[in-house]
Figure (cartoon, rainbow, N blue to C red):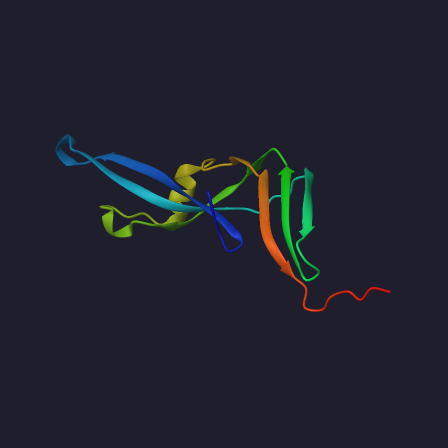
Length: 130
């Protein structure tokens, strides 16, 4: 799955096979875009950061965070046919959705993530000492 803006999406394949005249087998492979519905999960955020002053106006910082949320079930909805020019006998999206029911999905995703930040901090105005 990939993140594009706010919506998550993935590519799903569907193969239609049908018997034509004179017992000839035909097929069409659909590449479909499926979007994931938003889901909420509860997790644990663990991490910490360090900032080391090199001078009165410059410091180096590092931060590590790990968010544990576990697996969530994400419902998928087919939204687009990605290869319409390659399909012999095209079907509309409603027919494809009904043919795939109850698939696709839900997809099982691990939404845990880790963030590492390393940077420099420059103070334009040094703190005045009293």
